[in-house]
Length: 132
Image (tube, rainbow, N blue to C red; front, side):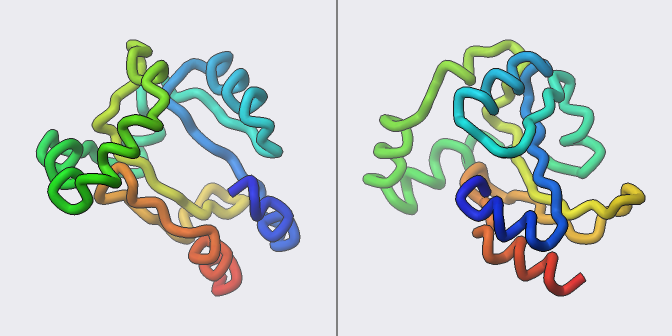
């Protein structure tokens, strides 16, 4: 999203990310990544639950990626930053999502991930904004 931040801003969209750590951990992550938008902490996963974001089963988390693309799965494992997974608030099985929420708090568009790598391209989010 950082790469297309200007395209979101020209649509009057404010980007916000929600992470599983504390507020301090989320702020430190945003700063370390040089993001132009904030990350808020959700250590108890309440936002994830409110948006109905689920958890991947171990079969989908581990076995499916290896069966579908063995080399890709092993590359992803080798490149993974495992420091976050040892955080007691982290849940490696937690699935993410993307939402467009209006200024009144109404959810106008929602994507619930079905796999841990199920992230729509920025173009999909920008098209959803344009359609509103």
